[in-house]
Length: 304
Image (cartoon, rainbow, N blue to C red; front, side, top):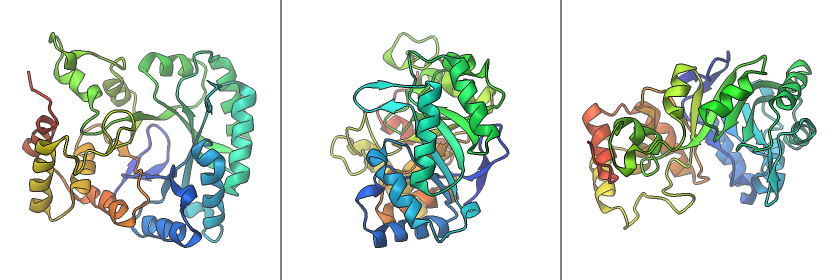
């Protein structure tokens, strides 16, 4: 698998990241196979969050990689969500969350830390102070955000001494408003509505890598669109292209994201080894412009 630069950082990462939100229910044998399969395919970037499995995802992962050289894996985690209560970007919460993640992961540093969803009460000076401490102490090497719009990022960057290297955003064939709003500029239709402040172009202009979460989902955790009877035309087009390239519809769906010139990094969400491997295969597929637009239109999007 080819590598990309993670934003303005000096970190090279694989084109596809491995999401670890669901690994807490895996047996030790299953998890070992999950990690081995990822590494064998050049996918050594593992995405976590302190809330995944109530922290258990980090714990089981830390134990599973205990025999692997730390420099052979890239670990990203997120903080800032207090489940069911609030968002918290305070200095104390960020520092405390990182300390707990380090303990659960069994490591003395995290490669990338993301702020997990915006905190309406964020004081950027506090975040900057926390990032400075974590950077200077060697506990976190690179920093990013998740689900933030351009002005939220600009406000944060005003106080930071390091770049925001990534922004994790929901994107899939069936959840592509950040793309559609750019296609439908100056149109009086639903697709022209800019729901995120032009975040796609902002990230491209400022060299911030967009990491796409739920790349197989439609709506907000409503389910997978592949082989879903609700989307017959999309699955027909995906099937035709899958047959053409001798891959699966999963591979084509990830390849659709990778084809975009923004050089996004899809984050997988599956623990099924076959589907996981299919995601990695997408890095070897280069869809034509006609094929990319055919998929876009099959998802119900109308070109102006």
